[in-house]
Figure (tube, rainbow, N blue to C red):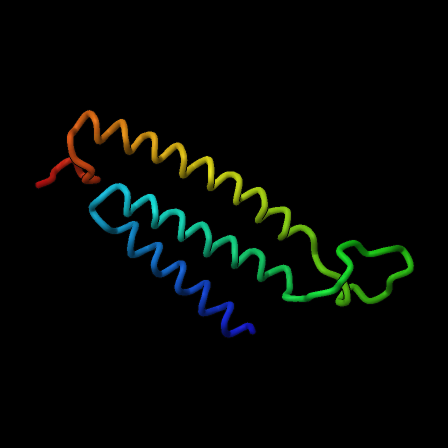
Length: 111
C-alpha cells in the first residue's frame, strides 16, 4: 500500500511540475492543481495509513499508535478549500488575460 501511495504522490507531483513549465496558461493552472493534489496526498499520508482507528485519544488510552492523527486530515481539508478558490481565481484571471491579449501564452508571445 505504501509503494502505491508513494507512486501516486510522485506521479501527481511530476505531472504537476511538467505542466507548470508549459507555455500555456491553462496547462499551468492544471499543473498547479495536480501539484496541490500531490501535496495534499503527501500530508494525509504523513498522518499514518490506519483504518478503523479512533481519531481522538481518551484519558484511559496508553498506546497512541492505535489512534489516528486528526491534524493532517484537518490540514488537507483546509488545503482543498484553498486550492479550489485559487483555481477559480486563476481561471477568471486567465479568461480576462485572454480577452485583453488575444492569446493564452504565459509570456504574452504567441502564434
